[in-house]
Amino acid sequence: NRKIIVEQHMDDNSQEVSPILYIREDAIIILKRNDKAMNIDFYDLKSGDVFGIVLDRYGKVKGIIISV
Image (cartoon, rainbow, N blue to C red):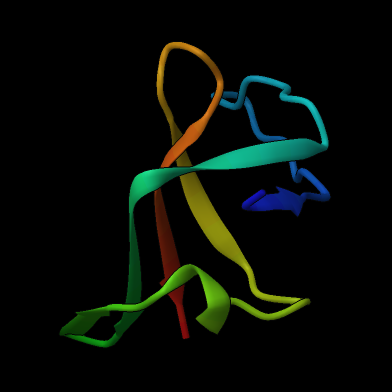
């Protein structure tokens, strides 16, 4: 079971989601620094990472972007 527990920071354009999100097997996870980006694996995520999430229409995570 690939899942994450999120603490959501809301802005005017955010939609509130469940704190437990399930990650699709085909999800794309991108680590970005300055003008460079690379794909990483789900197991490379760590507690405390700040990221943006893209959800599919069923509420499952299909993309994650982490900026460092």
